[in-house]
Amino acid sequence: MTQATAGNTVQIHYTGTLKDGSVFDSSEGRDPLEFEVGSGTIIPGLDRAITGMSEGEQKTVTIPCAEAYGDYQPQARQDVPRDQFPDNIPLDPGTRLQMQTPEGRAIPVTIADVTPEAVTLDANHPLAGEDLTFAVEVVSIR
Image 1 (cartoon, rainbow, N blue to C red):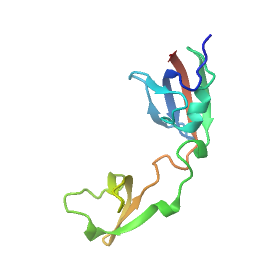
Image 2 (cartoon, rainbow, N blue to C red; image 1 turned 120 degrees about the vertical axis):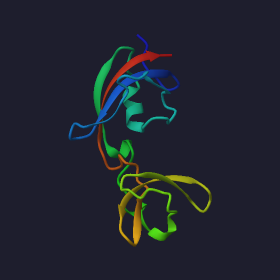
Image 3 (cartoon, helix red, strand yellow; image 1 turned 180 degrees about the vertical axis):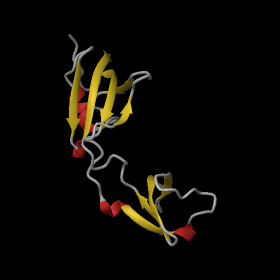
């Protein structure tokens, strides 16, 4: 039976949950996720968990935050004066925005807090610092 190895293209169905059991992502009702094993297109811990699995195999794995979206970095939060935001941009906590570095690189950020003086932007991935559990099924291997 063929097992997934680096360079194979695999399709998986998955459901990702947090420690409290809440679902943060799932392929349920969608086409399977397709990716090349070892290419770096999915989080490293899940990529390693898929390696060695066979078509039709199912398993549940817990991926520590260091092998998912990394530790939460407090220094990735920054207060920006509120008057630096155009009036047409909604400043609701939880809103995702894209900022640019002085070098022109795009960085996704989330509005974490808003006061009359400042808007706190958080450049951490929303799942940073979280251990993630995935129920996965390998649908196909090519």
